[in-house]
Image 1 (spheres, one colour):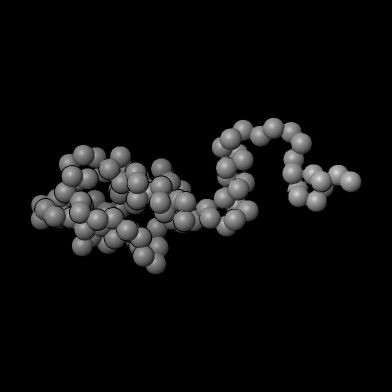
Image 2 (cartoon, rainbow, N blue to C red):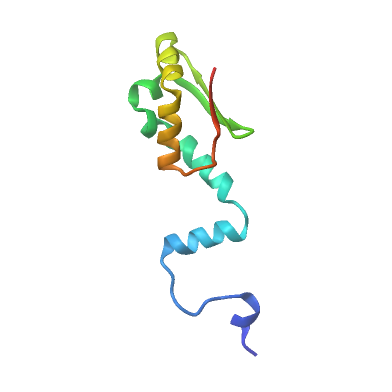
Length: 103
């Protein structure tokens, strides 16, 4: 009795990244993984100045909610909203967030 056939296991070795991506697809966790990746990489995306003045970052209904503690930084981020969304799309992928809301 061949157990590999029943559990859908592959006999060849796969790179870790490919195996991880297959696991995310199998458990339908790709979206949540990308959301957490975006939140954790916020400082890398926008830089130290904006990140140090950010009090919270979360995603609700495919909108990235960002709470900024500095008025001038908030205004600058509002003016460059499309650039930030393009950076997110480039780094994380398309479809993770549709809009950026600055609180």
